[in-house]
Amino acid sequence: MLTKIISGDEISKSIDNTLKNAVLYSDETAAWVSLEKIHEVCEILKDPDGLDYSFLTAISAVDYIEYFEVVYHLASLRNNQSCVIKVKCNGRENPSIESVTDIWQAADLQEREIWDLMGIEFKNHPNLKRILLWEGFDGHPLRKDFIG
Amino acid sequence: MSTIRTEPVTINLGPQHPSTHGVFRLRVTFDGEEIIDVEPVFGYLHRGTEKLAESRNYVQIVTLTDRMDYVASMSNNLAYVRTVEKLAGIDVPERAQYIRVISVELQRIASHLMATGFLLNDLGALATPLVYCFRERERILDLFEMLCGARITLSYMRPGGVFQDAPDDFWNSLNTLISDFPNYLDELESLITTNEIVLARTIGVGLLSDTQAVDSGVTGPVLRAASVKWDLRKANPYEVYDRVKFDVPIGNSGDTYDRYYVRLQEMRESIKIISQCIEQIEPGPVRTETPYFIRPPAGETYSSVEGPKGELGFYMVSDGGISPYRCKVRAPSFINLTPLKDMLTGWKMGDLIIILGSIDIVLGEVDR
Image (cartoon, rainbow over all chains, first blue to last red; front, side, top):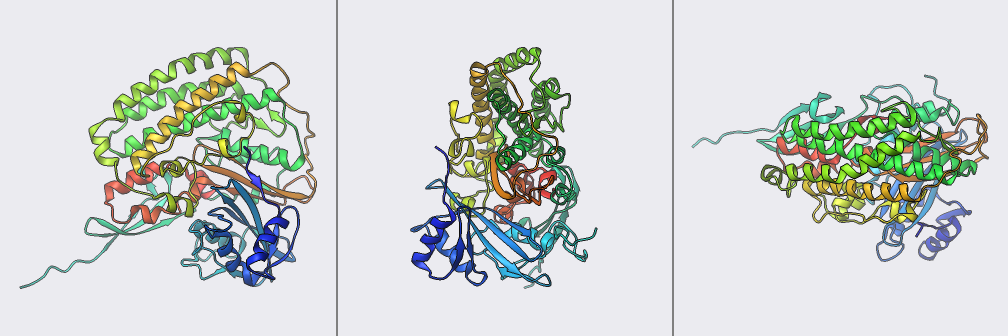
């Protein structure tokens, strides 16, 4: 049996039942959640009695020049299904987003990696330090405007 | 009456240390002999693979993936080419799919042999068990040499199939290996599985509960040792895994012994998979013709395979050009280190070495 891929529209309906106005828009591939409500949405998604996305597969960040996109790949081991949640993060100077480390421990090292390489700050992260590069390194190499 | 004043001592382990399996550094704080705090320091082998991928074309990136988990290049190749195929809509001939499954299962055995050998090395059984493991791993590397001429950095797979068909003498050597291997595993088990010293050192050491394992995102043998039955080959079968029968071994308690034993049983399952593939494989083409410059349509995809260390995934964004716009790697070794602090706290120095060894990290993949 293959892992069931839950479309962005479907997951957006499920979130809407509990929390209104958190999903900005959605399509077949993903649901875009507003920057302020990502932590609340993640709590709803993790809820073992509800959607049960107990497993955070990966957090990625992409630099689209006008904005950054933080992508959450989630999986439910019990129901064998997966979904994708995205957040747009504006501002090149100091973009920031709420940390989800308190919801999934798996976010810990991955959020530090994104801070290090992409320069997106995760608020309330317990230990937000550079991880692959050294303290004092100038810039964030995965940004498109980084000159090495 | 005077009391003895004690204070915690911080010790630096690595980055140059034989038991860290590469250039990995741990800052460990001890209270007496007990570990009270651990701070891993990464990045000594960081080469910026994800950034490099943004300036290479899709075929060239295959060689970058070899150098991530350098003891399991086949699995890295497979995870990468599958993502490109999904992104660009490339079909893979059936024979190529079988050859891919055979080679990644051989690679899984080679990787687990290395993990087991070094775990015993870390336990203080210096060199002897390691040489037993390496003797058999050598035969697998010889098979890889027949396939593609390389032994470690293989680059055997291409988007659309594999680089070339297996030569005739490959199949004879493979059959000999498959028939010898169960006996060899019995021999290895007779040395380790019921060894009193191994049992005393590993049972109950470095516990990871099932809820914490899921919460901290660990995958592969570390997750399955914590009695969570989750294997992408079963949960989301790719290539021809839905046509072969095999079991997913799990542990009971999530201790160091379970992690060792799950790996050992997985090797037996891999042998089963390979022998079924040999029966089912039929002649045919092994590669779909693709242009040298693959230009996938603009879009994005995530795809993952069950590598020897866990879920190895690629998240790739294409803008329609000849290089990916973004190529993110979900590296299992890296994420498996997330619960390290909780696993180590309360144990002693000697236990630290074997708990770290039982997670089985490869620094090429941790740092990328």
